[in-house]
Length: 180
Image (tube, rainbow, N blue to C red; front, side):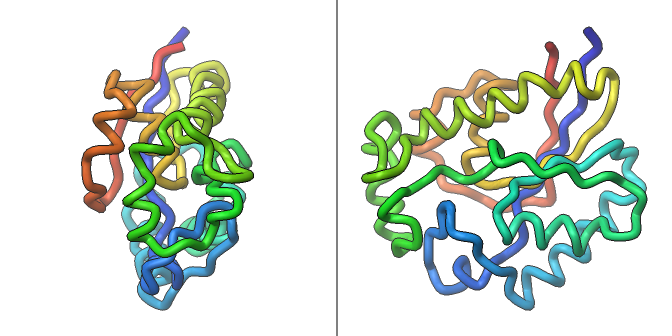
């Protein structure tokens, strides 16, 4: 089976990001800064050989995709498996609280939610389908921290412990190759 090239972009900055809130499975809306970032994402990627955009169905990711790719002719496909980790009863907690819980919650689910390992496994289930869906293609995936961790784990072999211990640094996309 031919490999697929995956470009990963995080959803653009949300109002919750700016307020220091860990949104989790709550929808979240883009801020003014986020809407500007989404427009720049479209400028960067519309002519980048992208066959399809696969996107989390959470509002902040969908809004990013709509601003970036509306009227581009590139199909935007939603998939709930690309969602962030479900923090359950802790969705919407302060970001500092999430950071304090991160390593502990690798295997222990958040109350009424899931563990990071469960979230990453959910995303990997999606990623495992991409080479068959887009053989030899190039796709863009818009998601969250769990999405990036799944790509780093599946494509590059990084452990979740390593990923959880590494601070997030935003950049204009990450690129991976996935083989079936």
